[in-house]
Amino acid sequence: MENTLQIIAQLVKYQSITPLGLDCLRYIESMLKSLNFDTEIVKYGPVYNMFAKLEKPGPHICFGGHIDTVPPGNLWANDPNQLTRNGDEISGLGIVDMKGSIGCFLSILQNHIDEINGSISLLLTTDEEGDATDGIKRYIEEGKIKNEQIDLFILGEPTCNSIAGDSVKIGRRGSVTAVLSLEGSKGHIAYPEFANSAINPLEDLISEFNNKSIGESNQYFEATRVQITSINTPNPVENVIPGSVEIGFGTRFNSNYKGEDIIKILSEKIERICTKYKVKYSITWKLHGEPFIINDKNIINWLDKNIQDITNNPVNFNASGATSDGRFLTKLGPVVEIGLEESEAHQTGEKTTIQNIMQLREIFKKLLLNLDTFPKFQV
Image (tube, rainbow, N blue to C red; front, side):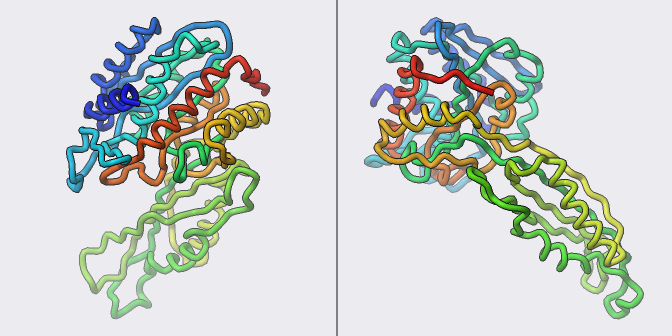
């Protein structure tokens, strides 16, 4: 236990707010080199990415993730870069998202590397909490691991509800965000008949969009929903009917759709509403990632058996939550995400328990030491 906590404490100690973190990667690199891993650190813009691999006969498992964190803010009771222990509870910036899971994985490698029957690699970045442009996405686009045959990616993102292993992600929803600009005509509030307020369509837009479902759920995905995230009217005075409004909105969509389908559905709704109110509009769309899922039941069954051997409880396999770097890795192989409490991600005083740390470590150990039973991925 102490070895694992010491590694996590050292990871937390390094300040690695996006895109910082080279010293943290160097620490991990030195540990892996001592275990005979081949390593490479590549810089794109201000972002650092590391790939490390130990080649052995058997399946190839790649642990993917990030060492960057969000800024801590000013409300932490303790130094966010010092691991703080209070009974079974431990806290520190990034411990859940996701330095704790990285520490668990490294601890297994340090203590059991000779018992692992397969190739092990790690792909880590300092740009996941940011726009993720120069992180794992860029590393893959540059063809750095195009020749690697990877049987399974394990990401240490926060996934559990309360106990490590109770919830495991075998996919993620797609993500689309947009900014809608409405243009009417402004005027004096005393003479609304001479204006066409850009606010007029808002009631219909909110009714059609906000927290409303599109289509149905399926086995692993909840129904697609839209959320309005901002409404801005650049109106400096109180007696002017606004001629323009800017609305931000986004959706996490399930595997029943592709990004282009969602954009088409929402565009048709916007066109109908704006035509009704005779308001001009423009939209800027951004597709952050398509939904993905592990379709190989043999891999899911393998995960289920090994995780339940540790937890003695059923595993909730799902594809809920936000996006992750899994959306880039899924092009190269199946992706599973197993980590600590997702409710603690980005929280002031981010914390977990020693019990969850040790259970996550045992899950990783069980998976890595049972690679001889891993089913070959079937497309």
